[in-house]
Image 1: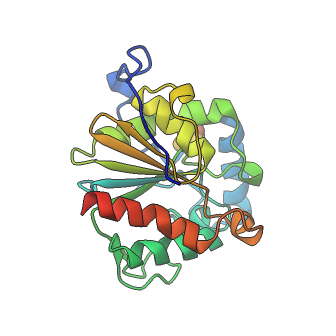
Image 2: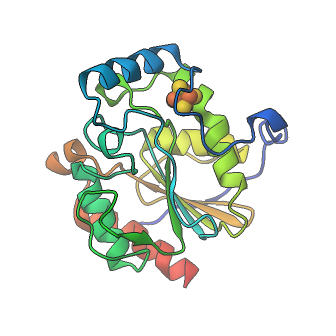
Length: 230
Ligand code: SF4
């Protein structure tokens, strides 16, 4: 059953970040997370043909839908430079977006496959690949201003899909909302003013292989978004 919660803005948490932080895309050598910066440099030395930089958002800046993932996968977005491109999670995500009209073209796991997003953008809570796909809390906090800026540049934004608990919690902070009023649950919808935040389990290989997330469960989230956006 769908849970819909209505949540109020937290005045303290809802303050806009300083103007200096209002940049949607970090530099390719962003030094703000020392551990991730070192990991990135090691990957550049080992795999010079890979992207190995903070992965920029992909899609329509004027879209009404923003999808927020966790972080680039080592051999997925970190390799190809496009969110969710080149690893298992992208197979399910892009197939679902095409099915519900949020993408068009044929996804071929390459950034030059011609796939385009429609009324939709994809970003990550953390822009650099973390070891073992696990960013530290301090890294999630440090990278949040880029997510805040990304959200702030989308003037027509109406719907946000958070893929996993980390993306959900980070989006709550971006929106200045209390996590106690909007707990993460697959299929939950949290109303925040004119925005709706939709929760989904992350479409990772682990979650789908273990049955935590089935394609049907994943599609149901985007079916709700499509029904709400029209
Ligand atoms: S994760 Fe974000 S803040 Fe940290 S180094 Fe990468 S781009 Fe910079």
